[in-house]
Image (cartoon, rainbow, N blue to C red):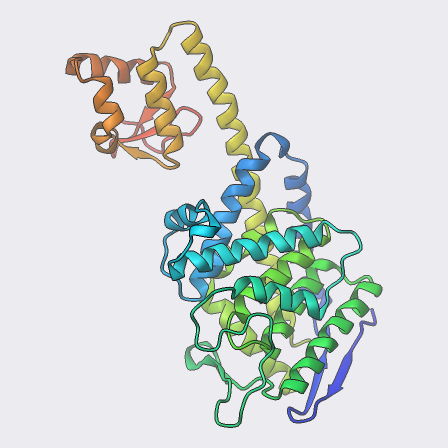
Length: 387
């Protein structure tokens, strides 16, 4: 298959070539696996859990992309920051979270417009959202670099394949970004799969590195927008968490592909596209498993309510089950017992009553206790159940 190649002669950086550069045979299997995973996921009962899934993906994605850039908020703290009123946010870490959320919202609005096309203005708008109000010395939201000679931009490090000096001159950067947009449209017209186009735009965008700061966050949002515009929901943003988990390989591949192109190696971009496709398959499979778990949870909640209505469990037991479910992971029995709400339930009750309530939940399979004294809700299976 003939794929578009665009060679640009810059004023100071030298020639820059946009090419697909992907070995079609090498990515054929991961491409099919990613598409198959998407088909299974997209036919799962998403409607019943869409809002909950969207929230989880947002938290995990903001956490992932923010952590790649050096943030130190935990995933739980990221979730709390997302719930803050944007007008009241003042702390630097919370501003970063707010900004990434705003960039994602822009990506969603744009991708839902059938007429949307990648443009330089869109790239600048994403950057403006990501860098809004940040106290970075070179924070210039939406403005491309134009380096003075005494302040070169250098990216990369020895641990990830070496350093690289991207274009420095402002007019070169503008020309290359216009070229990236033009080349991407050529790929669209040539009907190149979005699962190939999106990572290639991500790769070349990072090699141009057009802004002083925030390039990684922008690149991941661009990739997600292209995938989402092609009809892939949830997974594009979930990729940020995968990149964070594989951060060393993620960084190293940019250099590997760049060096391959410089040495005129055949299909130099194959490693990054292969990595992207494998990551997409992994996150889609995770989302599919999570949807099934959420559906099971909804069915389980209905079963628990039936037990309440039939007076087979009391309100204390119902509250305990709900609390364990909302914990999001196996709950140590000590954590339950230390919880103020749990203590209030049994303030005037004996320990025998406490034990009887828990035992009743075990007997009805509404909760399990494993060998590590951790509580599992009944829809989940404890690996080793204590006797």
